[in-house]
Image 1 (cartoon, one colour):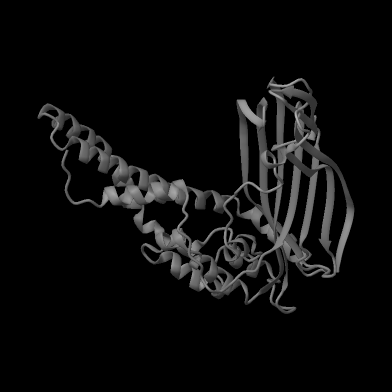
Image 2 (spheres, one colour; image 1 turned 180 degrees about the vertical axis):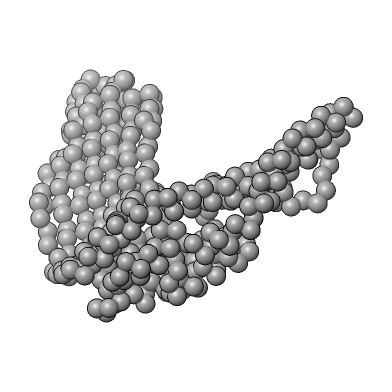
Length: 391
């Protein structure tokens, strides 16, 4: 059942007309209708506790319409409630915000997600001696750089680039994850108590609700001081246009145990789950330990699919949605009119809120889009693995 509430629309009829004075022939005539105010909510409410799409749109057009008459070169020009272009500049569409796949969203919100993967942490400790040696190599690298400069700098650029790439990789893919895991281990007590409360809520009627923030897009104020907002016939209107806006996106999910005894019930079971020691975590732990699997995860959600496959043995995600909220503002101040008349100062506000159901899949999806940090890591890998360098 679809419910419509607070539906209200107020419109104005806009008319632009050009008439020849000599014979009264209308050479140009355009009539359009635009929204001055619109408030509309459409909600699907027949699936209690499940996915219910939602759409809310609000338009508040406070821009003063163009009005006036003028006679130029034997023609009479009449403008009545003309509001050309404002709705397009602050449309109710959302700004583009990159969104993870359904599998990634489900994995990030899973109530059985480990606080820290102890098997992977112990596996990665084998790299610690090499990471410590890299610090000692810094002094040797500086001495070699001085020697290269004294010899005319041959090979300095390549060796410097390579060493910088190695240090970046050591920081981003070695020390940062290891220190984050150590911090998680130190905060294990708080995570344990939080997981116990989640399990208690999950076993109640209605299940557990979780949410995560996906991203925010903020449009910095953009100003066009010579915006052509109307130009037709012998009429020209220019204004200063100021645009700004913001889009926020987040996701929610609801969970319940797969069967009555599937959720951890003892403190030891909860601790194993938080440390990633349960058997259902084995596929994901093995995947993370495979060399170069992280590169595959840059372009796909294979790791998240494996995470969800293990989680599905304990929990059911029976509802998952993505919410988007966008607000836009377009301000106008007329700076030039080529005809006697008034109008165009004011502000147009638009708001849009959407709730879209999301379905996870156990089939991996692939995307060519990667983050700036991932691009940096790939570039540093390419530089660090070059066998020879030349200036």
